[in-house]
Amino acid sequence: MKDKQGLSRRDFIRNSMIAGGAMLLSGILPSKAGISTFTDSEDFNFSGTDELLYGVSDIHLHAAPDSKARLGNELEFARAARDAGYKSMLFKSNDFSSHDRAYLIRQVLPDFEVFGSLCMNRVHGEKVNTFAAEKAVNTIGNLCRCIWMPTQDAVYQNIRYHGKKEGIPVLDDKGHVLPEVVRVMEICAEANIIFATGHSSPEESITLARKAREVGVKKFIVTHANSGIWKMTYDQIKRCIDSGAWIEYSYITNLWGPGTGLPDFERMSDKEFAGFVRIAPEHSIITTDLGQVGMPHPVEGMRRCIRALLENGLSQQQVNYMVRDNPAILVGLSAI
Image (cartoon, rainbow, N blue to C red):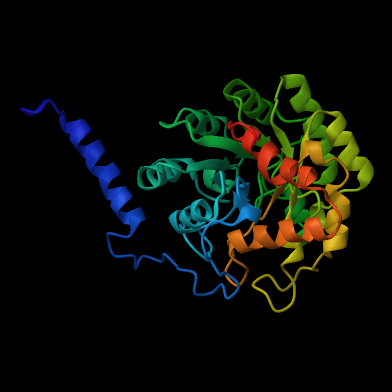
């Protein structure tokens, strides 16, 4: 049934939901439902566009709403990034989709490129969920630009952290990529979006990279190549690159440690981080992986990262590849 203005009941409900979501995101409605502000981030000193940050794309960070406490919400982070001069952001939630919220954020910030993603953890079932992947890439707005393999529920992480071989696998017992994982690779290839390894082991990532190349995935990212239990050797990184992979280095490793919101991790030196990213800047991206309570604001984290890279001898062009050109291309934008 349509009213006198030609709007169906379904259209009216849909438009009302979009408007209500945009109002909530923009702060018109009360924000008492667990939406945090930046009071936990003493390091964030925003003062407008920063030449150091102009054109940056951070395509791995966390924000509220989430199943874990976060330093700020997605709209707050996106607005701060836009005002600092960023080109784009891609949000990651270990449990929930974020591409649908990216659609709403764009109603509030139409001049900023915001994207979301989907992570294959148990909230989507006991194995990698191909149906969830198909729905993600077909959501209105086409803003799901990355599908991550399991993270918190990865078998490798459970073995290393808890000594139990449980969780959502990506390989079978013979070391072959599971059919459902191959299908998600195909979905990513067809949609020309990122397939990311999540919290797979270094050796699993090598196997996934080889299969992705066979399948035709153009945007395959090995994640956390410098981080914790996922830290790779030079040879492992080179093998992934030889299979067509992009390598992600997250600067969170240089910000966590004792006295922070993530005190149990060993902090990496800026010199060591620079050594990693020097391996192949033209095939690499740098992200912050920030958003945790007790950690620096993601924009401040990226600022520190770029400054540290330049101080440790990387050229401006090398930095541009990793924080501007490559991540922008991976989410479907043009390079700077």
